[in-house]
Length: 498
Image (tube, rainbow, N blue to C red; front, top):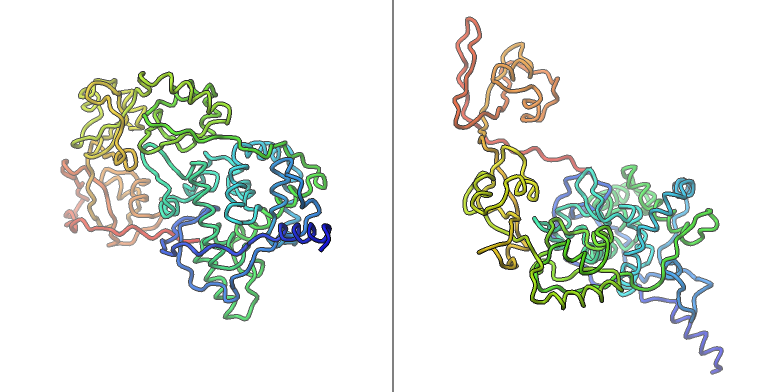
């Protein structure tokens, strides 16, 4: 066999990745309860794609494949494109939207600089399409501190319940939905799970946005009506209908930036950060100083930190720019016998006022409230974890159990109890509230009503009153006060699913 033929066969083997997905993850389900343009809590689908089969992911032919290493990260991403292209008017619409905002595109792509290399490495290691490295552009514009109106967080936008399912810790000290390494691991686990479930990347992306149960039901409807089972043929919310076209538009711009008059910043094809182990609790301010980096850079790489101290038991590593990691390690070694943390964790033995806690621990109450986010007229419930000064008997590193599970629970200084009342003929929320020493707005909130909702005679409503103070009911002229039914437990209304 000639050398040319050998080389040709070798190159053709390189150009066809092993795209068969790994074994699916656990399919234990939770229920989606929020409308979010983000990764939703997991639902068990009613029906999976009947046409889904185990299939390889085929790489599109690329003229630049070969022995030449990638010059920058964008070229490396292009070489790993493996999803079928979507080509429709929605894609054209989103292309025009992004192309008409070059400043936004440049800011967004520049913001991705610290993270892209790691994400692409993970995708290639898992043999997943590198288009997925562009998904945080759609989810969060690559902002790890992004929080949606539905409380999805991080650059991959995990909802709290989905984050817990994928073992993303959310406690007093950190939120791993924002963590660069952990959120990327969880997002790729979830996306691979969805691909294994539906056998189609477009459907997997729709499920990431809309929920796997919603996609499963949409497929079942189409099947029962004899309709196609493709992404573009499903009936779905407008947000999900634009979701894959957005990713396709960004993919097209990355593939041919010159065609859209777009400018991509040069991002070298090498690691931006290095993981550095820590064995002792350390203040964020001290870590920043020892690493010789700005606080802004430190937070961009360690966005999961929620407090001014990093607990080694819960966060045994820091991410630092590659060169600064060596500086940090050398300076940390030089501080081996010096204190690194001025804060520690403390658990309340009983329900206490902040003033009591501050007096017991010898720190200003205003500082205690500020660092722990305790509003006025609130008490710290028994078992709550607080961040406090590290001194005396509290001069120890925090244990794993507390570092991983610390939560702060608050209770109002005036404890309220729920009672039930009945509306009279002609009552409104305002008149009923005035009669019971409340406000119409509170009455509406307590009963899940609009403030101008009409009331009917005999309609039962709930009111919150101080548990220790007797409730005074003003007598209406010529009428005796109504006997109140005992307080009833109300089941919280189910939140509407999208």
